[in-house]
Image 1 (cartoon, rainbow, N blue to C red):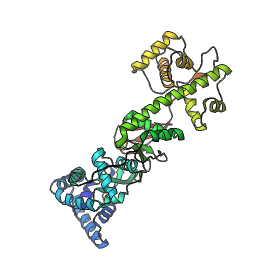
Image 2: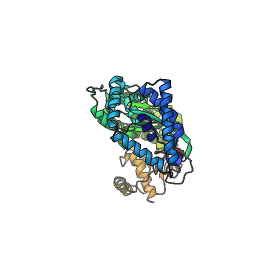
Image 3: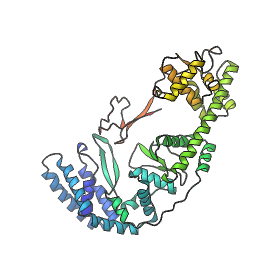
Image 4: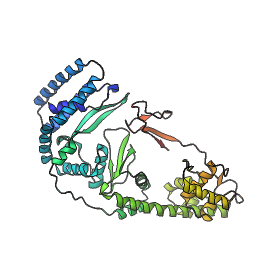
Length: 425
């Protein structure tokens, strides 16, 4: 009964979404059945009694905030005065649990992650397999409840929630010494490069640049798994988002390897772009797709990447980047109208820096346009700097709702969060 009350109070559906009280009973019932191994008769008696008791509070509420206050009261009461009861029960369940559950608790304890999706991603990264959610529910540490995003009845799904005092219970748990395998990070990065696993590589580069261990992935996207290194969590609780990440145990080694890869990749890209520009100078016309494959040893699926590097400047502004400002100043001292080829050869910039400098010079009105090669060679090789970004999806990172493409507000219309993410094509 205490566990049932606890889950009733942990219900994540907000007041503005109608609390979802009735919808949650079936979820509570399932959690109780799994965790307490109840018979159908026992389960029916407990859930019926729970409904009767909770309905009294619903009927007695004087205003719409009373349910929230009662939830808070129940959670606080159980977390303090009934903590020992829950702790003893949960410790017994953990003791009987599988090695997978105990490994999951080690990750919870040592990684400092508290988001369920990222913990599952960590488990997959470290062990190369998924943790079975029902095992976590059976151990008493996890409750899967019903959730409706505030103001958005279309965004309804199940929501896994850890018991609030899980950290205190783990401190009382006698977990075995944890020694997961340590993989060879360099070999993994080299294999990604050889296989041209560009999506996985770009995902890892993004993690490194943002100093993240876990990040969302749109459904349909998947990174390459590497036991002990990268992990993927196919999220059954969301129709839009999955998760990918890296093991927190190898973060420094992996990020150092990724940094070296980025440096090598940038040198390689710069060399290939130079070959393409030299072809254009010699032939007085830009290379065709077939030419790109031949002269730069590209794969067909890399053509679009190099066409973008050749023909489009970055979207972001570099007005506050002092290093780019300094390089732009040096460029103007050497050239009245610099080309991309000039920036790569005379100025010795890599392709990323060259594009950034070109964008800054245009934004600062120093030049009207940036051509691929010097204008006296061809007049039809202007690099676009005005092409507007195309939005693929807008997502609220708080309530995970896919928002309208024409959203002109800085806030989510469903939950009010300012944590809005725009994903460009």
